[in-house]
Image (cartoon, rainbow, N blue to C red):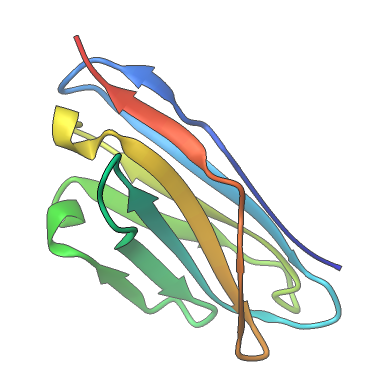
Length: 119
């Protein structure tokens, strides 16, 4: 059974940091890509960062230089955890952050975790 569970969101002041976690199980399949996306109120969901099983990383422009994605992988990549370290947070980073995994070409989403940046 595929499972994707995010955690680590919360309220933080501008300039602060948060670390999000995504605990994922691919069931009988290996998890190829793990990615973080976010959706602010009234806006479309957008890419933040992705990491493959091989360690290749992609960042969207708003994340470059401030966010770091990483991944703890099991031997067979069936039970992996992705992290998103977010530094120098800005009010514009306020959104629900979602984790998405790709298993055998199919995408699976978590329920999301709220990040609010406000003084």
